[in-house]
Image 1 (tube, each protein chain N blue to C red):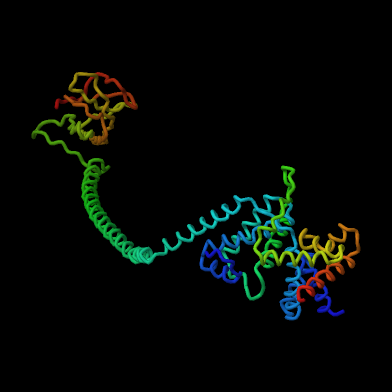
Image 2 (cartoon, each protein chain N blue to C red):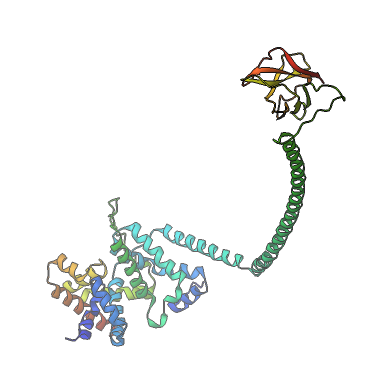
Length: 179
Length: 264
């Protein structure tokens, strides 16, 4: 593998040829993003580590699942990670880290690749621009795996209100992404 | 609001996974039929990805990288094993095995059939030999039966021939085979017996031991009697035989006097 920064399409193309160094490269670029999301959803280091392995093994086994023409790899990995983590969260009655340590290690954004870092920064800026209640509703749904019914119970708001916050929040993100 | 509008309203909730399981299933069915909603969902999914992208990244443990690579290596070893099994030589060998299998089976079947044929022939030969022996035995048995029937028939006439001019005397002829364990007695000119009396034949052992009872008999109106015994006094060598008169049904010890006697 070249040490020069490569775009997603090139690396995934090498991955399709069974190049293990391509996987190493992608892991080094995106493992912090994947681990961070898994940790945020599952709140367990052990469970999050399992998700990281699953996500990268999935990429290794089936690199054609990612279509570079339909988007960047970082959001694709983020969504894949989120789905796997939420599935795991819903299946398992998971125990909080028994060591009593904080499940969240030190932030690692300085280790991420430039374009991934840029994507993440843009996403964070968007999220901070959301009204708090909309951001909360979106995160409870997308990162905590709750349905609108469960969110309504959790925050003590009517179902219609919760639905409206989710709807408005997501439409705002889509609108801002298109800019 | 139409059903389509209702589904479209729910698309953002679907994109972030906020619908219930039942609502999701209904919407999935609608998406399969509605291209507009499918396109709308794609753009909403991109927006939803931002929620995950905004999560603070975290450094996974260093060992996790090596663990992943180890798993990849293991999978590659597994994949390499498949072509080994699928090498042309292996396939060819496998095909050869499958080709020869029916040949081997046919040979084994042929050997089995020949063996069975030979066994059948042997059995048929034995059967024929047994049938011949049985036929011969039947002939001998028939002759024996005919002889015995002649000896024991009610109308059998026993005629003792003596010197001309001599008054007939009670007499008996005994044929005895210790090896065959059989005995035949032919008696004639016997005197009639008193009531409840019976003639008894005695075997006199060559060893000098006590006489052995050899059967009882009564003469007919002509003083004739026949006694045929088989499976008698096995293996005892006789030095002679004697006949006494005993009380019915017979005795285990001879009672004097001796009516008839003779030596072997």
